[in-house]
Length: 555
Ligand code: C2O
Image (tube, rainbow, N blue to C red; front, side, top):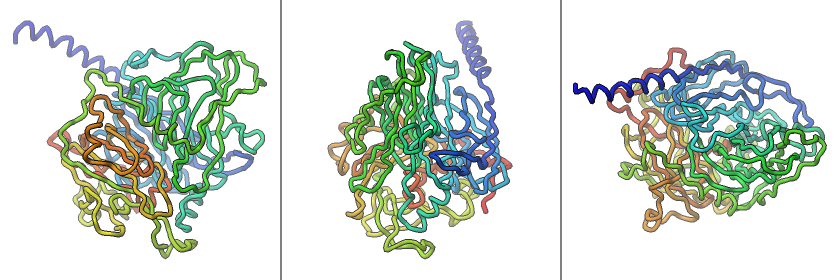
């Protein structure tokens, strides 16, 4: 070896050592069990992790290993999904009930373990079985390997997680059961919440208000998560404009706005500067209702307070101007204006596409099933390319793939909408090879003529995707591609496909496993608005290892 080459190796080895030395194990125990709560002037028992609503925040650095021991002290079986985590070669830990694993039974426990590789920003975790995620959720914050110095913006003075949620004055499992029995979907929620509290604009006197103290003339990073179950939201802080710097744990070009639109599953990282006169300022969240045919929805406003240090508690806060509930322009402007921040070393948008799919989806009226005892005339049903997704019964799809079990699923998910009328109930997956590039035109459709359309947040497990373009109406394959952003598209794990419109996403299937893609409006998941990508093993070492020894059994 020449002297020059030897000299070059030393700094490289040093660099590797520092990187490895920085990787830590972040360990938590989540006891999921009942907790008494007085909320909205109602006493109830809800199920949470460690008796916290929202649940504990997991904080890690890129490169760390996360270990979470989940103890199920609730009467429900449950799994926990690490929303947005790639789960590179750790698909068993994805926590998607019956897709990658089976729920943890009551009185049982399971340890999720995964590495965080190649992603930083705000993600979250939530129960992925039934409506339990209304109360079983929390933030998952990933800092750069070298800490806040690694941010592509000046390190903020402080960071404030803002978890937006939905609250029912009722056991959420009963809400879900009712939704199934009637076939009409869940009852609307009784309140929206900010960090678990509805704020002071509800009819309940003395409802909890989330209040955070801030110093004057500093910059804060808000890590905003939409953990609501069924509603897209607008979010604003009075007299504090935002600079958005990341979405779904992917950095964006800085984007200035007074109002944020955020759909269930999505996150937004936004900087705010506390340069208003010292005082108290409301933050507020309200529903963005995109339905083209109007149905009842939660018209409440959740509030929280930014209180400047020293500001007296009795000053009445000022309210931000919120867009109207139906302001599709405000929502669309936010969703469509964001572009990805391209940094050296970031993977470029792949240009050679192996699978080009057109996936149409929507809701329609179907027959009442025999067990839908309160169904009157019709039950809602949803599909993607006319396949209404059915969960397998006794084994997860990932286990079936790994063990080569026959007849659990079929590999015939259609690449384009089939011409045949009618819906097929099936556990049908789209099979792709390791490393294939997949492009999907997600097209929202109105099938019924009665139900209209609405914006659907489509979430993909296991990968981020580039959002190349979005539009209203039917996708036009001749004109649309010329407008694709192949330079700096936004990168997401959840895209709000406009009602009756479309979004084009592209990703590289570089992670073997079974990856769920579904509407993150929880109401639409049991109706079948879902599909699965089966990604085969690549050449070693890109092969899925065997399941962990304590992998939950299916019953
Ligand atoms: Cu955040 Cu499949 O979910």
